[in-house]
Amino acid sequence: MAGIYLHIPFCKQKCYYCDFYKVVSPKLLPDFISALKTEIKLQAGYLEKEQIETVYFGGGTPSSLSHAQINEIFSELQNNFQIDAHAEITFEANPDDLTAEYIAELQKTPINRISLGIQSFFDNDLKRMNRRHSGAEAIASVRRLQEAGYENISGDLIYGLPEQTSEKWSENLKLFFDLNIPHLSAYHLTYEKDTAFYKMLKSGKLAEHADKKSEEFFTTLLDLAHTNGFLQYEISNFAKLGLHSRHNSTYWTNTPYLGLGPSAHSYNRTSRQWNKADVKHYITELYEGKLCCETEILSKADLYNEFVMKNLRKVSGVNLHELESSFEESFKKIFWESARKYQASKHLEINKDSVFLSRSGMFISDRIISEMFYV
Ligand SMILES: C[S@@+](CC[C@H](N)C(=O)[O-])C[C@H]1O[C@@H](n2cnc3c(N)ncnc32)[C@H](O)[C@@H]1O
Ligand code: SF4
Image 1 (cartoon, rainbow, N blue to C red):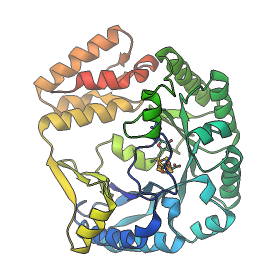
Image 2 (cartoon, helix red, strand yellow):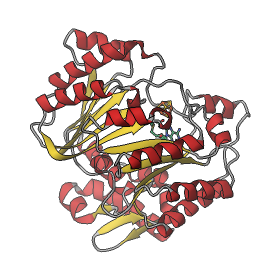
Image 3 (tube, helix red, strand yellow):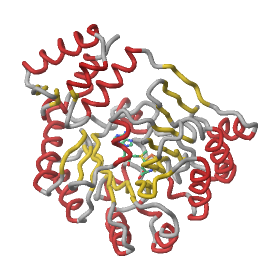
Image 4 (cartoon, rainbow, N blue to C red):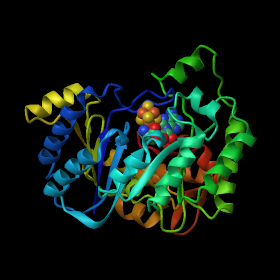
């Protein structure tokens, strides 16, 4: 079992919070598709003939592709990989791209799950983030998808936005749950270096929320998700029973995945590989039949760190039998030192089979995970 991620690095404009790799000019799109098809062929052996259970078109903005381009890419995948007949095939879309005509085109492709970047339903938030759509457009795009028969829909929301109040965050969640879609990814805003928001923060035009406020947003998220019948399965991900993202779950389990396109990462249990974040370079290299990735063979310490990071992000936590059978004493010693410390402060819970984050632990997960790392 394995997954494939395709990075489509084209956006019509740059959102002020986002540091994912993208370019705004569509000029290179046709050459990018040729290069992507070459990369698919060259990487056909990476997953060692494992059955592909999930394919994820991410970005950037995959909804800048036409249905013909999606099918062209997908055919190349089918020619080179064994894609399961029931594979989950996700497509990230921006609400303003999802016109009735575009959805009709999507129906001619094998895509069976849509991940929609909603971020907020408030137009002043959207404007401030430099999003291209309004809240009403996001709602209308969900309705159109549902009318066309798409049920497996996910929405992204960002909280901790500048000047966001608890009431506005609750209202955003209420509007989300009213849409009757089965999956939610909700991320606290991070001020990433090299973004417009980061510059505004540094020049004092924006202010970060105090930790206490952020924790209140997170508590509201967990409570409202629970009340609305959503199960949290990872720090930022919630789904109706059985409708979790199978693809994202590959990242948090030990499942191999291949990332294609500029900036995409791959993992095959023994090594990590990543493509340079530069679409021009990507096209030039692949035109000459060369891959443009760097590879790192994972040491025992890297494998242990990956294990802790991936498993602690899941609500089910670290499986202790797996920890016991997979790692040497030196790693387990570090693990248990931090685990006991954070158990005492009630950030971690421990039972006979697993160690997992409590609510308050989820809120400071990055700190706990980095302390458990073997350095
Ligand atoms: C790579 S983006 C692609 C989605 C799609 N292009 C769109 O904009 O709708 C995936 C998601 O990551 C989240 N995200 C990106 N940057 C973030 C940041 N700095 N803080 C919090 N969430 C962020 C957003 O919710 C976004 O929808
Ligand atoms: S959030 Fe999406 S649309 Fe906005 S810049 Fe990032 S990838 Fe592009």
